[in-house]
Image (cartoon, rainbow, N blue to C red):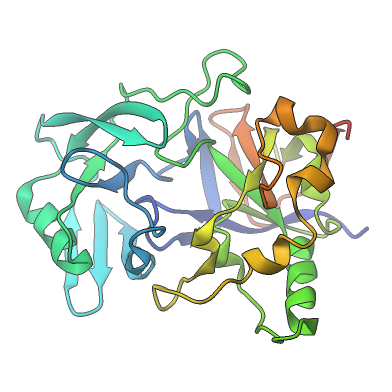
Length: 291
């Protein structure tokens, strides 16, 4: 095995919008700094993602003195990090509920025009707390507007393995980029799917704990450049060799995984808030899960 190190760091400031690649990032209790602290919701506060609105993939959210939002045909909109409206609402992400602060109407109208549906942008204030699953919570661990856990790690070799299978399949599918899977941390030098077993790892001076493998959904079939659904891959191929019932049958109940879950990537919790991680940092495996 070659020297393991970080090859990519990505954040997704607004949930389900285009990501940003960074050279370094600060680890915070909720995840990486500025990762999914913002989210689009329906007017009644239900979260919105590419699962229903694949065009979300094409909207850029840049970080500067505030957020810079860009969409083809709609120009660029500059907004502050925090709406400062005092207008708060309960918002829902899957089965969890927390409080978000709503941006002004002009911001929400811009997103509504781009996505052709009524929506609003909300921010997660510092005093809004959303706990990770009790099954994996070691005390007081929280998460941003991410689906369930603060970070996701994937090894380059895992994607290489998948792309090799796609290329040799009956349809000879073109190689997929890593952004189909929206990881925060990408590792170079590991063996394919080694991340399945990572219970605790160090990245530079930071320590991360593995919780459960990531069960993948239809979002992986969205072409992130075009904002369109692009067929049944990679889920179709992953289902032939990455089913939870086949990979870790003894751990299904303990991990809360459905037998038919298609696994790709490992969810992480940061255990050293305040630490920085950088591209090129060495990755060391401290402990692994018992299969």
